[in-house]
Length: 224
Image (tube, rainbow, N blue to C red; front, side, top):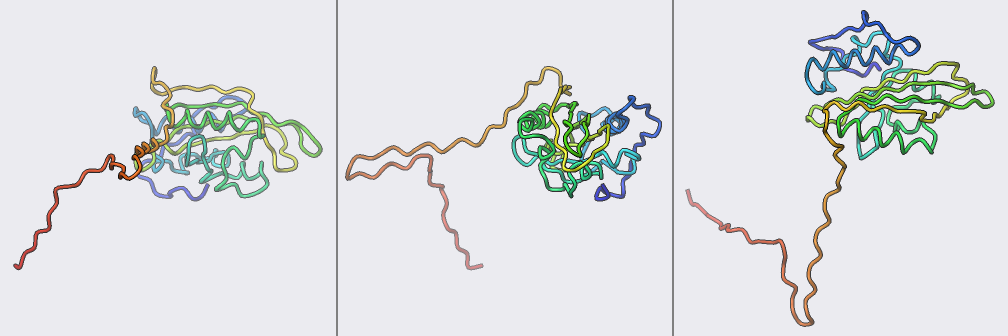
């Protein structure tokens, strides 16, 4: 995660935070995000500084929501690459899940950005030849972009156990949503409405133009 901005006027440290046993980076990244909020609804993506994340860097990542339910990995620590056995930047986060679990994660990503909300997921990967069973936790935390829209996500992925042969893909066991605005319903993504069809004109007639008005413009010339 070396692509994050190196300079920041405010660096929040998580060294003194006491994490939950077993999945320490999850608790540390959430504490860092809460400190960045500083009483606001959401922090900005530009405020995330790798120096504040300290030992959680290898498990952290940043997503960009590019379409409803689709978020690509823009920056990732080494852990996601180890799970997939390849560079993961530019890949959709759902690539790390089994096909049956991808729709669930897509739905949770959309809720994280639209509510907005914090999402925690419990994941598992089955054992097979060269691939021992894995248990994992994933945390998704919404961020504002520089334009003010909620289209970035600070995430953390932690596994317990030997990775074995890559790639590893996970099932969603449970998930928990924590809306940041109590009572705010999920705002669905609505595509732009299709233009209304023009009425058909009888034979020999020209169909009237709908939704078009002529502006009162005139050309003014000047010899000055």
